[in-house]
Image (cartoon, rainbow, N blue to C red; front, side, top):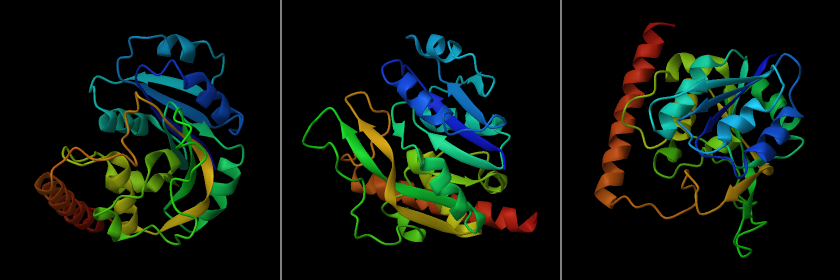
Length: 238
């Protein structure tokens, strides 16, 4: 099976090389690292181009939006299995080998993560409590646990998820919920990445939302409608 790792970048020079290195050492010669850059103004592009590695494929996005930057990367992927990657984390050395067996019988798999923070009080904590069992399913509509940096899925999921709806809270939530609707999801309780928290995080995972209750409810309602419409359309064309 060919693996595509899809990464979205934007001004990621500070931590990017460490993440790319942690990914490449787990990929085979026929796999690919798809990077979609959203107009970086720092040395991000130079760092990417410094790799003399044909597995790295760089594309450019004009959306200035994290969700649609990831969408651009996904459109260019050619693998049977797709991993999502943030620009500032570090993959555990066993992430790929630990994840692949579960994707034989599941549409989408996600894992726990070890928090890696500049704040020593946050470091070495787990993203999810060890006692938690199954974090998948439709309950993620209310509290999303499909964290993009930990996700991998069968590429056939893209047939039902692309293009992304214009109004969704995050791409990972959309992918996870659609996988729950058209297939099965699985949660690996052990941490498979170091999830970095710092002052310039684009993702707000685990941090307090700035949305009001009414805005949260409206977003959930909109994504529910989009899920219903997309599932109906997908089943009509199966």
